[in-house]
Image (cartoon, rainbow, N blue to C red; front, side, top):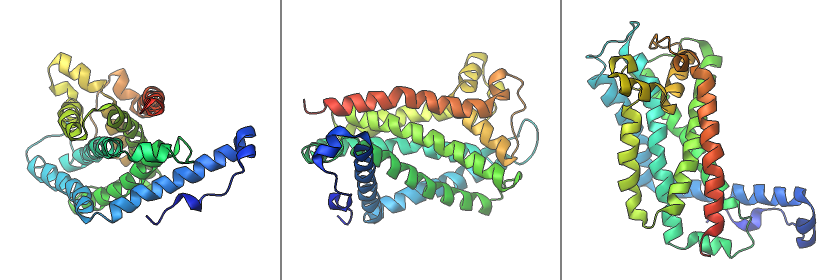
Length: 284
């Protein structure tokens, strides 16, 4: 492992016990070491790299060309431009499975217990995991954007709008990462993660505005789709990218950008404390 705990700055035990600043520096240094450890695993596992980058490419190509020629956009315009922001968000949601699986295997193999027995900041493992997943999400977003440009998608509101849209998508991914961390910590068998995650992620993406406008769904289903946290991020991204939208006059649709910030913060407010609490109780 190229990233080792000896890389962190030395903190005298007496100082760390008294002052919060050295403890914070210690936690940040250990968190960075764990981030590098997780990223090193990604680089050294070619099959995982292939899957990580093949899946987003397949999503863009399959959904763009299979649905692209047969769907109409409510306000007109290219269906691929309507679809691509949804595919970006959908890919971020499916990253939940990778996060939960990695954490569950760390628990199963005793990796977490081993690090907990060492002089490592208690927060380092979960913070490192979330930071590494966000870094991986940035690479996935870069791949998706390149693929989108190749199939005719464009951002039309300039670089600031595109950066804002990508930031909202990554904020949602960061929040979802903490759901994955919590699931990985509570699941009894790491092999069961896929059985739990993917049946939950599919309806979450289907009952949203990723593929079609909620107004085209039955009334109860449209209400679920409109208030789905994914729908707010997708609608906000479409608006910021300058892509065709839904044209809905509902409150949730008119305040999509606001809710694209609020929903991830709500998810973080729930799952960060749950994850930390569960992590602290492991092996007791």
